[in-house]
Amino acid sequence: DVKVTQSSRYLVKRTGEKVFLECVQDMDHENMFWYRQDPGLGLRLIYFSYDVKMKEKGDIPEGYSVSREKKERFSLILESASTNQTSMYLCASSFPAGTSGTGEQFFGPGTRLTVL
Amino acid sequence: QKEVEQNSGPLSVPEGAIASLNCTYSDRGSQSFFWYRQYSGKSPELIMFIYSNGDKEDGRFTAQLNKASQYVSLLIRDSQPSDSATYLCATPGGSYIPTFGRGTSLIVHP
View (cartoon, rainbow over the protein chains, first blue to last red):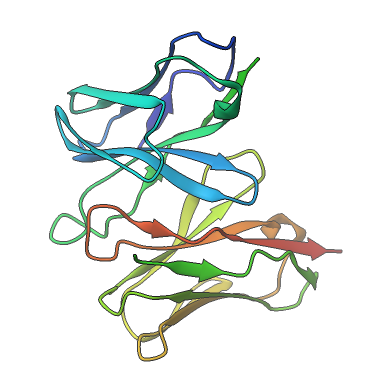
């Protein structure tokens, strides 16, 4: 079974703190993604990585950075947390669509981050 | 900009009825589609994948794809209260980054 794990299910941080969210997958997927999900706004892509040390900005990268030093691990960093970053954060991984597979994404359980 | 559109709902159906969820897309190059189910407070999980025109059935679920009209739908037969969730339509769209709709909330009431 594909497994995507995230470091925390619930996290409470204070404004201005640096926050690290970790994601690990065990299926040797090339692609990894970070989304945030807010009511009525659907899934919004923050960053995407298609290979180790490679990253691409998604739709809402401001205030975030990412790190992918190993294929199985993709970290999301909030440099200086703000209250408007309170959200559900979802990590996902996949093979690329095409010869490697359908492109189906496997999601982690999510981290509900509250910034006070 | 590739777009996938879904009615946000909620779609409310009685137990035992057929629930019909619809999705339209803008990119004619999109070849395949996913339907994910997301329970409240949980992460999305894949329930259907379709890449050919026509119907694909899996148990109580049927996905329908019409590339000429650029829509994809999900039918849930004999709906159960446990089917109450948000259903997300998505397409790989030929790129690394899938495009998701915002999801349709389904409520199945006893």
